[in-house]
Length: 428
Image (cartoon, rainbow, N blue to C red; front, top):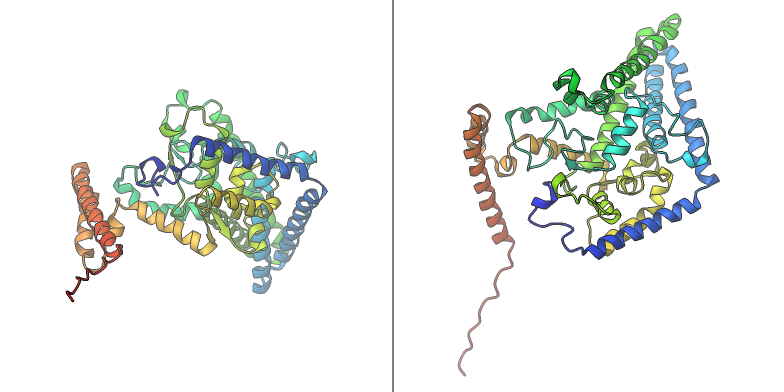
């Protein structure tokens, strides 16, 4: 992956301005069709999911009262993990997008919903709905998947600290809800600035986030274990809550990585985005800056239907339960305009995303030019780039670039069709 303007082949170069605006019109028509059809079926769906989630959480917590018994611990922890995933993914994320506001139900409305997460709903709605969905995959503007703390594009200058990127990404996955809370606050950026230069309202938002974290931690790690104490299950109940939060965090992180980070998903440079980006241009950026996960209906529900990340980014305010229905129409539009509809099973997308995390933690072309026969020399080169300063990094990077070009030339020669043998005419 590299920013689209620096790729050898621009995946949208074949589209005319008229094509792009026509794509916008056709997608607007799909959106309007669903808006016109919204009704009781959609309302029943979200109310049913909310009811199932609440009953599952209540039942699981009841089972965990006896979690001193290993079978009950496993059963209660599994149920609580699923309940937390449903609450975050299919309910909280989508309710706070305003997907169900048209119902005018004060209990299922973006203005009133507060989710089981470390970040506040108001902070999340700003950073996710307003920033991420407006500036999707724009380097330096969209920080939704660590763009502020990780190297996500070849055009970003490599420095030695990025070698720790895989470890940092793993830690972020385990404690993802706290990473989201820090991202919502732009914590790193604000803490680097003097207090008088920090974003307006930062102190108040930080206090609200700390209060929210304390509330969630008290519920999971104090109140519920204390309720289980008379049954001799306080410590197992505490461990079950920690495990359920860990499972929810890793699952959420994986799903979100699959939506924006696999190989083949495009990134963009801020200075190359038109100042007055049209509706069609915004749609096209969402189309090639997102990826889907193929799978069963149960898997789609457990991802909050973010397995249809392309459809979600095109229509973030439509009911998530409708994404599977409109996906064939969206894919047909991709095919019509010769764009890549990026979809693959969950293991493949997770593997691709992690491959990119590792690849971009290393200097450009290091991984692709390293093999068994040159591993020692390549390791020495990497060590020199890590320890000997900027000048050495520049020289070594040129060497890696040359190796990559030669490797590409050899591959191109091997892939080229063999020339037809010339048969000379034999005189009669």
